[in-house]
Structure formats: structure tokens, C-alpha cells
Length: 459
Image (cartoon, rainbow, N blue to C red; front, side):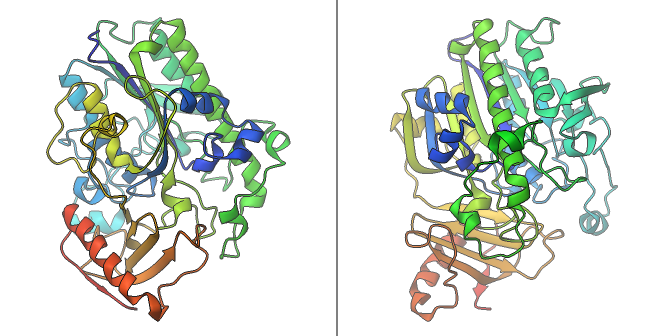
């Protein structure tokens, strides 16, 4: 393996709050939820302010794989397949000599959004519980995955498919079993990996996502006893909405996060056993956060930090020394970072920047402004600065349209004085100048993402 081409593991959880990790939260550290991630943060680099460009599962994954916003790659809601000609990071890395592997939840194979199918007159496809065809796997070779893992499994037991479309069933705790497939790839006892090549493996766990058909979070047995003495985070404790469900679910949610950490530790141990750790870069993050029905009737799809702020920790290569980065970073920075460390030239259409430049202090010039597109619950756009959160929404159908011609102002928060976003200032006359300035910043980011110049109005 070339020293300029390290192995790369992208470890992706689903719906994980940043404050479930001890490196971000003293209470999480006291509960010892994530000892392995805490160790990784001390040895690597922790990004204090990381955000998702789309707080929903499929679109966030599409952003990671393509380096572009969801409206640019076409996957702006769940139920939209990633186009077969999309040049994903797996395809770039394969061309550069990497072996590629995908394990876990895919969520980018099915076209089953009724409004879109009807409008575009395309044939619906549904691989939620079926094997994903090779041309819809984004260029990954080794494959141990299901399109929508929560449809093929529960906390304990389920099935996925391999690259030959064979069903593989499992019985134990899901997070452990998905990780076992990643360990199989690293161990290579069955010659599933080309050891003459560096590898890129995308591990897409579903924990701590809620189990849709059971309407609950399913931690490992014993989670309630282990984490029942949790302290509720302030953004949930002081939440303005009156129908949250964190009291009955939070201990199991933390149990899921603890299981993710345990399995990351198993993976690192296997890399050490195979003498691969020094040649491997590990990226740990999630697709979006979780507000436990405090902002809408489900868990994400809102502009608030407990929907869009995520953990991000990287270890290996340039990412060492226990750095804590305060600059705003995004899931859109993942694709350029991965290609950069692999020595692959970055495409001109990438919306993010390589985080190598940030940790090295070279060539990083970007304002602390984070732009997020929101779909499904509503068609919305938001901008977050160090001080402000400003969000607008449209009455248009959020499942049918990726963008709107006209938006209405909906939220304004002073994050310096209101970090838990309890006091919406959007209708306060004294903040008219701030709204106008933030509106201009928002439109600038929308235009950069290829969206048309739009009209933003008062409600």
C-alpha cells in the first residue's frame, strides 16, 4: 500500500446527538457512554461545531457520498434513489486503486415518493426489504447492507444482503452484528478484501435511530438499568413543545450510543490485531441529531441545533494531537477530506472543503456560516452563524419540490443569549436589520447551491 494512500473508515451513526459523547459532554463522560470515542478525540481531532446540510437520513447520506447538496444530487427527501451515473467517493477511490466496502444502512436505492413519481412519470422502485442491485450501490464492491435497515431488522435480529444479493440473517443485537460484517472485511479470513490495495469502508449503523414499526428506541438489554440516572439535556428539559417522548426513551437511546462506542472499540482492536491502525484514518460522525419531538411531531427535520448539530471526530494521518476545532464544519466537508487524504484531485463541483487544510492551518478561508436545507416536514432553509439562527419556510409541498420561489420568515434566535433556542425573535420589530442581513447571507448560500434567487417575505 502506498504511504500516500491510507486506509479510510467512515463510521456513521444515525440520529446521534453530539452530547451523547463524553468528549462533548461532562455528563456523558460521567456516565462513561463513549470511552472509545473519548480516547479517539484525545488522540485525534474533535470538531466542536459540526453540522448536517440536510437533517434526514437518505439526503444526508447522499450529501456525504456526492459532496453536493441534496437539491444538487436529487436526493432531497427519503425515497429518492441516488442516480446511477452519480460520481460517488467510492467511484473516485476505486479509480484511484482502492478496494471499497459498504456495511449497514443504505437508504438510497428506492424511488417511492408518490408525488415525484407521478410528476416525473418514472417507474416506482422499492428495495426497502429487497436486495439492492449492483448499479444502485454507489460503486461499492464489498456489500453487506439493506436499503432501509429499520425495515429489515429490529434491535435484535434481522437480515441484510451481500454483493451477490444473498440474504444474510442475524439474531443478536443489531449494532454488534452490523459491526461484525465490518470486522469480517478487516480480518479478511475469507479473502473478501484485496490486501494489495488500500481500502475505503463506509460503516452505516442505524443506532441510535428509533425503531419505526415499534415507535421506540431499542438499546441493548440492560440499557435502562445502566443509563436510567441520566440528566436530561437543557434543550430538551426546557423545550417549548409539550409532547416530547424523551422520558420513556432516553436511557435506551444512550444504550444505543454506548453500543456504537463499544463496536467502534472492537473495530479499532481488529485494526491493531492486523497491524493496520497506523495506516488507517477513522472518521466518526452521524447524519443528523435528535430533538425527541420537541420541535415537530418526530425527531429531526427542523432548523434547530438539536436537529442539525452533530458530533465529528477524526483520527489518523494529519488528524492527531487532540486538537479541538472551533470552526464550523459540515458533512459536505467529508467527501473532499476523504479524496484529499487518498491523493485524489477534488472535483470542481464539491460544496465543502478538505478538513486537512483546516487542521494544518493552510488554505482554510471560510466564514462560520452553516447552510442547511430542510425537507419532508416542511420545505425550509436556514443559516446558522456564531450568533444567529435564521430560518425560512415555504407552503409548497416539501415532498414534491426541492426548492421554492418564495419563502416566509419563520425563526430567528440569538444563540449567544438563547443557546437552547427557546425565544423566537422573528416577529420582534427591533430585529429588522438583523433579519435583512441574515436574509442576504441565506440567499447567498442558496445561490451557491444552485438554487434560484428567491423572495423572502414576512408572514
